[in-house]
Image: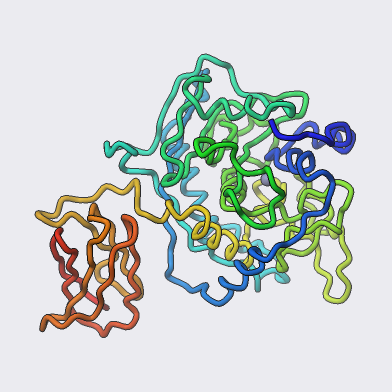
Length: 425
Ligand SMILES: [Zn+2]
């Protein structure tokens, strides 16, 4: 385990409620590892934000393949497929701002609440190329996995079959989500946790995954989905909406808590994002719309308790901000680019054609996925054979901006694989 210099301070800093509900566990680790120093922005972080301020646009949807490893010891922990599907729905709603409770975002935050344009789908193909439903079930010989601040590997044991868990699938190309019994310990009940990407800006050193096979999200089984019969087993009423996954995936994509985990520094510690108002503490699972812990002078806003990166009951969560979205999308491009390469997608057999295109008809953006050679060329031609577009493939998925095309029919050709007709609306 990494350094835990501030353990005694940590202990006293935890209030009673925090002892009961540790939340995602990151505040403990962060405080332990950043050695009490306020975390500062760095240049890469600023660069990432500015870059995406300029380039963020609609209809540029990121689709992430997901595998759920359901590691169970008791039958009731072996969650039904429908609970996993429900969890996926929650993620897709929250990351597209299609959540019904988006209407509860307070007026003062409507200008910064946005659609992250990130979607999640259950993998259709496993890393060996075999068909899958994206749900990996493993019966475990141990009753659960508990937090030990002296040795975080007791939790990460769920990520290996050699320690009664389930092995990761190629973490470069799949988002791995382990579901298991995270046992309550003297530190409290952890609902879930996730490592930020290696190199993600604005995180103290030492927080990324100790090895690539440990990348991903871990969820306490009772927090998964919103139709979970064990939804109350985490002893927190109001947490039955599958929002722990939304929060932990935020960490996995490099977001920090909006109060920046400062136990003592309070308002001096910031998540580095300008459109999440400064907050000194988490909401600590209390849905208090009057909470305003930091006075930011003129135009001071209340704490953004509805932000997915606070600690709140699921029923108070409802938004990400633009800067959070920019940060996540930049982190995917820079630090988790393998997620964009189209793994996990079953490529349909269309005669000789070994690739898929969607949508068709197309408006602004065409997504092509295929089993092509690394140097294959994708070309688009009008019906008279004139080339309108040509590009070498990148990964196993590429997006083509088709907004410049006039309406009509085009031929899309992938060298060595075949061709298909595309209709531009
Ligand atoms: Zn967290």
